[in-house]
Image (cartoon, rainbow, N blue to C red; front, side, top):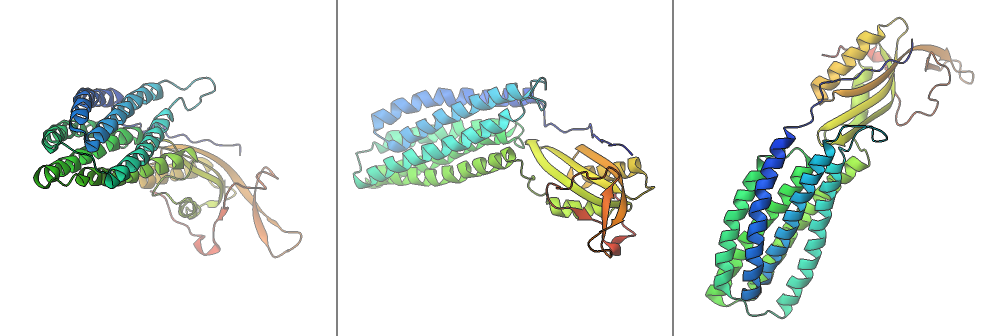
Length: 337
């Protein structure tokens, strides 16, 4: 039996990228226009909270531009050395968005602490009016991005930027009211620190998820050991090794494995059963399965010990990862859907 490769072709690659670009462009126009107004008012009011919001809006705009560029790049077909195309450009964008959130959070933390120690005079009225207008703009921008495909880590990165900016405006409005009614100028810096905490949380999440994809870790919700054991429980499957599950980009999961089936078993039929199980239970449709017949040999060092080997002797003596073998108690096996 030669090497059999099964490929699912109903790959889910997300919603329309044209729709994503349209909604992201709407959000970009809203943010860029209001950012220019906020910088002017922040300088006039001497408000760090407003200036920090403006700086955050600048990163929002950059994040959306980066997301738009990544969407366009990821849409390019696979060719030449890039056999997966440029799909991971979206993950690069998401990671860049996460890193910029963390860097900006560090700078704002420093400025907020400095202003807590030496609070400047803040014009509360201007802060409140601008923050309320900012809330309206960011609600509209957040709604626009939420209409795009947020299962894409790239779009989610831009969404988190804008959502955190919305939180920032709410905190700034509260701080402005406190300054206006009580004269407590440190409220401006305290509001900034609240926003910083939210930025760190979002930034760490984006960096962690994008790093998992770059390191080709198994997707969340998929345990390769459990998956391997389920595959060898299929009647007729003796062993599964070299099992790899990874994400090419958000929502695009791939799997490859070497499967040994019992002598005389229907290789093609078992491959199709495995593909149905992967599709039905895990949503994995991009699979590469190498299927071989196995035979049993007796170990020369321990005659009572038997080991499964493929027809091609010496193949994969050093398997990548755990080797999953059929247990005698499960000889009857189960059928995949």
